[in-house]
Structures are given as C-alpha cells and as structure tokens.
Image (cartoon, rainbow, N blue to C red):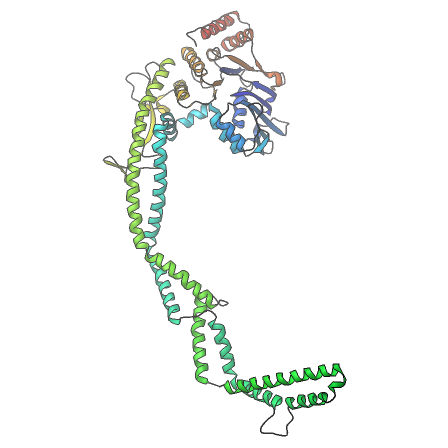
Length: 581
C-alpha cells in the first residue's frame, strides 16, 4: 500500500506531501490546481517516461518520493531485496528524479537502480487507470490479455505449454526452411569440399614434409659445389694423396703435440696444453673422416632432384589452396579434417530435412491440441467474465447493458488445423478476442470502442476493474477522472462501486464529481497559493466540515451556499448509509 508521496518542483507543485490511507481516497481541487500532477507523480514512481517539461520553471530537477508498506512474502519485497534495497520496518522508500536536461534517476530502498526496475515493481503495486489507459484497453490484443488474466491458471497453464511448443516449432521451421532454400548452395559447397578432399588424399601429404623436401632440393641443386668443398676441406685436414709433400692440419697438430710431449714433465701447465692438442688431433681426425664420408655419399642425381621439385610443386598447390601463402602442411591436414566433418554434415542434410519435417508435423499437431485447450478455457472464462461485468454495469446505472466476448479465428491455409478449420496462429494461440457491448435491449453488440459513449466507456472500464479485483487484485488502484462524461445517478453508482472496490484494496480517485468524492473514506484537496503554485500545505486532508465546504463548491461553485451545503450534507449522508457502502 502507498502511504505517502512527496512531490517537489513538478509542474505547478513547489513542494507538497500527499498522505494516503487504506480504503477510498478522493483527490479534488479547482481546475488547473494540479490534481493531475498526483497521477503524473505516481506514474514517474512506477517507471513512466521522464519528460523534462514536467520540471517546474526555475528548477533544475523534479523529485518524487514514495513510501510503501509491504507485507512479508510480497514479490515486490523479494525483487527489491534482490536489487540491493533496504527496508525500514517493512516500509520501502522509492524515488525518481528528473532533471531539466532530461536525465532520469531512480532509487529503491536507498540503492540506485535502473528505471526499468520501478516499472517492474509497479506491475505488482499499483493499477493506474485514466483516459489513456482506457484507450489501451480498447485494443483487441489488450482485451485478450485481460480475459487471460481473468481466467487465471485455466488459461495460463496450457498457454505456457503452448508457447513452449510454439517456440520449438519456430526453431524447427526456421532450420528446415534454411536447409531447403539453401539446397543449391549446399550442393555447391559439398562439391568443392569433395574435390579438395580428393586432391589432398591423392597427394598424401605428411606434416613437415615440405620443409624436408626444401632442404633436400637445396642440397641436390648444389651437389658439385658441396662435394668439391668437402674434398678440399678433407685434404686440408688429413692430406692430399695426389700431393704427398703438402702440409695438412693433422700433421701440424701432431708435430706440435710431440714437441710438448718431450718437455711436459717439467711443467703441469704445459702438460695440460699438450693434452688439449691431443684432443684437437682426435677431433680433426673425426671431422676429416666425416668429410670423406660426406663426399662419398653426396651424389649429383638429376633424376632425384626432378622428383623432389615435382613433389614440392604438388605440395605448393595444396598450401596455396588450403593453407595460404605462409601456411604449413599441418594446416592443410587440419583443413582436410574439418572439411571431412562439414562434408558429412552436408551429405546428411537430406536425412536431417526428413527428420525435421517429421518433427515439424508432430509439433504442429501438439500445438493444435494446446491451442484448442486454450480456446476452450477462454470461452469458459469469457462467459463468466461477461456475466460478472454485466452484473457490475447493472449497479452502475446501466441495468440493461450486456457485455459479451467475440472470440474468433481467422482462416489461413498455412495455419494450424484446429477442429475442422485451418486457422492463423501466433504466440497467443489462435484466438482473436474483442469485447462487445449492447447498451440496451434490442441493440446489436458492438465493439466497446464503437458501441459506448464516453460515460458508458468509463463505467465499463470500472466494471472490468471491479471484476478483476476479485480475480487478480493489486494493493492500490489509481483512477484519473474515470468518471469523465457521466453525472447524476450514474456518478453516484460509480462512487458506490469505487467504495466497494476499496473494501479489498487501496483506491485513489482524482475526480471532479461530488457524487464520487462523497463516498471516499478520506478526502484530499489540492489548493494553489496566490502565486499559482502548490506548496507543502497545498495538499490537505479535509475534516468533515471542510468536506461539506468542498463538496458544496463542487456542486454549486460556491463554498458557503446554503443550498449547496445542504446538498453536500445530503450526499455525504447517503454515501455513509449502509446501502451506500
């Protein structure tokens, strides 16, 4: 329940506090006094659009703060705590700030939150009804939602299952459509993959083979130079058989070692150097032997070189096609592995198309059964809902009015087979729902947007809310001039039904009709000061005597008119009588 709102620098309101209470609260005041700012303020607290034009001239921002009492276990409490809010003895403080530049900020329980959270909390806190809300309820889609909300679990259960099957059907149908419409592209992709895989398989590449072949080609291409250099190096180390007089490195090292061996026993350092020369001699002999073997093994084989170059050309083509200019054979093999998997997937698409087609048929059949179940529940709820609203209209001075629901389906050759028809369907089911009104006997039921006058429409909307209150109540209802376009006895009955609604919820009504205000448990009046603003003391709760004066003003335009006061007192007495409540 909303206990209090503080409004600062919003429209004509400078700084005002609106203290609310359980039951029925009426808000009245002169035209232009700022009554609608109460509705606007609550709209901001509930996450409504922030309009910088609402900020009072000369102020940099407008602020609306609300204090709510919430019972334990309330979904609002759970959601607020989840967002990091703190409660104060079961009370939750919420606020909304709108700057003159258009920036908006929201706080819940002392914690800054997204504005969307206020709207989320508002759905479980307050039902706001004004002229614009009536216009929204005139839309068939909103009327279908209203009927579903009234039906409760009877529709909610099968509709939830329907929507899950509907989601799965859309996924399967989308995949099936993609596979069938892209058959040509998939066939071309499969042919390219098959050609590439056959090319790779025919070459039988081995990872690293290209590197080894490059090294072999380099060696074979310079075989003569390599052999000549190895032979010269061997002769320099071990001697040249063709020139016995030539001095080689091995002979020189041996001479040096023998020179040191002759005197090594005189100095340990020199002995160590002699040992190192001995090692050098062994190393020279090993290198000379390896050079001799290298020269013997090296063979300038033009045939082998041609074969190597041909193989490198084959591998080069694979690299360019499947790995890129800087790629490796390992990447070619990776492409082939991935390509094999993709080809198997493409080749299996025909089977998949058959499987998806079977799934689609099964899901459509299941969806049709659920759609029929949802429709049956709607038909049943529509009869109860229409009867309850018609009964409420009888209490609102429309005793002969009858409300009915037109639940229809639209034929669609590509739709669902429900019963003996093939009808269009969507996430809501297969039903189009519209509320019809016959305001008097003999009148043809027509959509309420066309069949109801302004005053009748207000009463229909109120009747709908009274019926809703028993099926899906919210803690607080706010009506902004729901009594527009009515008067006389109809206005009295509206006040009576609002009072009845207030027995199970907090009801706040912004009204210009004394017949409605008389039924309120608490009467607030919005008054301007001489400079045209509403200050802190400008929203006040009226005493019994002050209520008589305000009702007299609303009736006769004169606060102290004796006739007006008498009429006001009569209204209050009638509203307080047992038959009035």
